[in-house]
Image 1: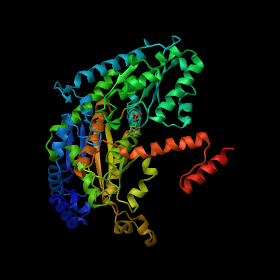
Image 2: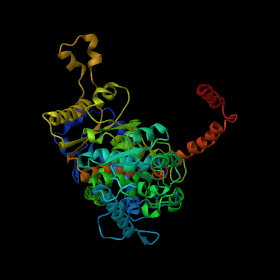
Image 3: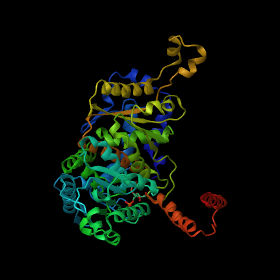
Image 4: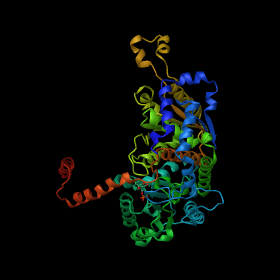
Length: 537
Ligand code: F6P
């Protein structure tokens, strides 16, 4: 049944119409325990969702909606290795990558766990060899630099986690990333590196992605220009892929290939061999701890009752805002500098997953699906875009993420950081009325400018400390939130056909540019090509 025609949706609509004027002020005044009763503990994550425009009735109806939309059935099908990615006829089994249990997980009748463990073991051997210096370069020098070449899901997860877990990394090995086809990225990443001390990890699920293959070929040229010996490639290039044939064609020995499988979606792949650069940075034990953290949240999502299931609750609240409040974006605001790439990571995670406008059956939707995801770490964001959050015209739910113990305790920094986090959620929720402003003796002409309407919803996630384990929990939480929303919306969260057209057009345009032929496109593209050519001269 179409989502908006379901009884549960219509009941939610009626509830929305009856309560849309309710303020967070009123909701908190009505219930002194609201802060506690609208909170959950999942693993190490304490989640306060009380500063949302919801009542117990809203949550109850949203849970009814989740039941009616088959969220639990789809979840169980995912964990069981069923082919829920219907448009690509694939299982969706990133949870198997971090499974710490002893059960079999089968795809097409075959247990995937032995292979998962075998690849993890090989990754650990390789990472240890780089870290302890037993993997030497072609000329016998120690490897000091590891450069991951990949894009999208083969880049963003490792970029985010290597930065997030820098505190746990081996500092004498530099891990860098090249993704953009813009040669500046490769040039800047390698300009101060010695090829003889550098290993490239070419990470690509398909091993056909133009950006990655172009960068990988240029990286090989850079290496050979210095080492002058084709056989050096074996010591300086390894691959992470599902495509052994293409890896071989590139010239990388498949003995140096770390495999993963078509049931791992690119944007859900950081716990697969795609995480090799992470493992080099933080070591196999910390990587294992990261996997264990993912597993904690996977188990919570798999087993907790819907009412106490954090990814379910957060997902449903997002559906409520998208469906009835017109929320077109969500901000993720981590109050931890190490999480500076967290929101960027979930731009792909969320927007490539749920940026869809037809259902799994191919029918156009008549409701909002995935929001725009964005954000920066606090307190930088406060001095950049929070003005719009507080006084702009858009409705933007925000997630605040904080840690109780700092990894770099210096003076009063962390207490001030936490005070800012809490202050922002207060200000967003409760604002400051015109009367309060007047009571401060503010000139009447300035009163409208200094008034804060409040009523801006937030979730606050508090964790003890940023560790590989808690980071794993946090990432899995957002992954499963995306899953829940996709299930409610009835879309396929695991394909990404929307990125294909641009790739095809770029290929065609590349030939027009490279061969200098007459373009026969629309008048805008034709003129732009014309100007580009003139400017090149
Ligand atoms: O952007 C489209 C996409 O297919 C992503 O889903 C994927 O993460 C990225 O390209 C990279 O693909 P690959 O790992 O095959 O190079």
